[in-house]
Image (cartoon, helix red, strand yellow):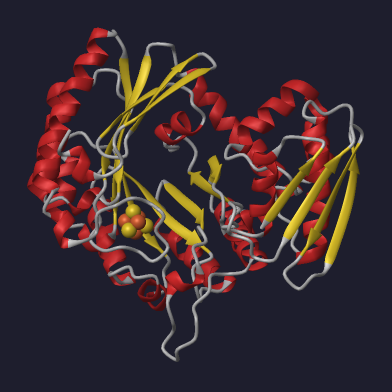
Length: 459
Ligand code: SF4
C-alpha cells in the first residue's frame, strides 16, 4: 500500500491504522498492491483519502479536539478510521487505539480526565463500550498486583523454544523439527549455566524473586528427567523465600504425562498451563496440532489430581470454528472449573498458511465480526461462571483486531502475567528469545538474548 503523509510525520501510527483494517499490509517500496491512502493535516483538520484496489475512493475528515493530549495524532487517525470503515464496512472495537496495552492507556485517561475517562474514550477514541468495561475490570487486579511490588522485587522468565510440531497459526520462533530437537540436551546445559549466572546477579543486587514463568514453545516437550532437573536446578540456585508463584507452560496436551506432572508438582511448581486451543477435533487437525480433545481431557485429569493451579488457553477465530462452536468450548472448559482461562484472538497469517480443506477449498480464519462475537459470547459465559478478566494485551493482525484476555477466579490471577505485561517490575529473561526488562520507575531498559536455539548454544 502507498501511504502518503502531508503536513505531519505520524508514519508509524498511520501504518498501524492501515493494519487495523488490512492485516499484514506492506508499505516498503516495491510492495505496491494497488491501494493508496493520502493523509493530510493543516494544523486544525485532518483528511484521509483512500483508494482501494478497484480504484474506488473513500474520504473522511476530523477536526482537532483540544482536550486530547495527543490531539493532532488522534485527528489523523480518526480521519483514517472514517475512510477505512466506509471502504470495508469494518468498525474495529478498539477504535483508533493501536497500542498493545489498552489498560495502561485507560489508567492514563483516568489520571487526566477522572470520571470523564470512559466518555472520552468512547467519543474521541471510538472505543466500544464493552472494551472500556474490559479495561475497567482488568485495572482492579492490576492495582492489587502493583501494590505487591517494591523496587527490589523481580521475576524470572525461562524460555524453552521447542515444540513437537508447528501449529499452522504459529507466529513464534520455536524449533519443531527433529533436527532442532537434537539441540535440546546442549540447550539445557547452556540454560542451566545462564540460570546460575542470573541467580548470582539477583543475589548481588539484593533483589527478591517473586514469580517464575517457564514458557515456550512447549516446555513439556522436555522429558520428565529434563523437566525435573531444570526445576530442581532453579530450586537449588535461586533464593525462593519470597516466591509467590511458579508457572510452567505445559502447553500441548500430547506432551503431558503423569511423570512430567509429578516432576513439576513435587518440586515447587504452583501453576501449569494446559492448552487445547479448541475443543473441536476437526479444527485441531486443520491447524496442525497433533493432539485430540481426548488428549486434553486426559492431560487435564492428570494435572487436576495435584495441588497446582491450572490455566487453559483457547483461541478465538481458528479456521472453520463457528462462534457457536467456540462458545460451546468455553462452556465445557468452565465445567472443569480451572483457576484461569485465557482467551486469545487468532493471529492472522497469510491464507495460504492454513492450507486446503478436504474438498480442496482454501481455509480461512474467522471474519472480524465473527471473531468479535466469539469474544463477546466467551466473556458472557466466563462472567456467568465467576471468571473475571485480570490482564489483557493486544497484538497486530488479529482476527477482528481483538485482544488476548486472561480470566481468573477471584484470588487466582497469574501475577507474572500482570507484572510482565504492565512493566511493573524487573523481569530477567533466560534462554533463546528471552528478554530481560530492567524496570526503574518509568524507565525501562530491554536486553534481548539471541533469538534462535542454535545460536544460543554457541554463545
Ligand atoms: S505450541 Fe505454540 S509455540 Fe508451539 S508451534 Fe504451536 S503455537 Fe507455536
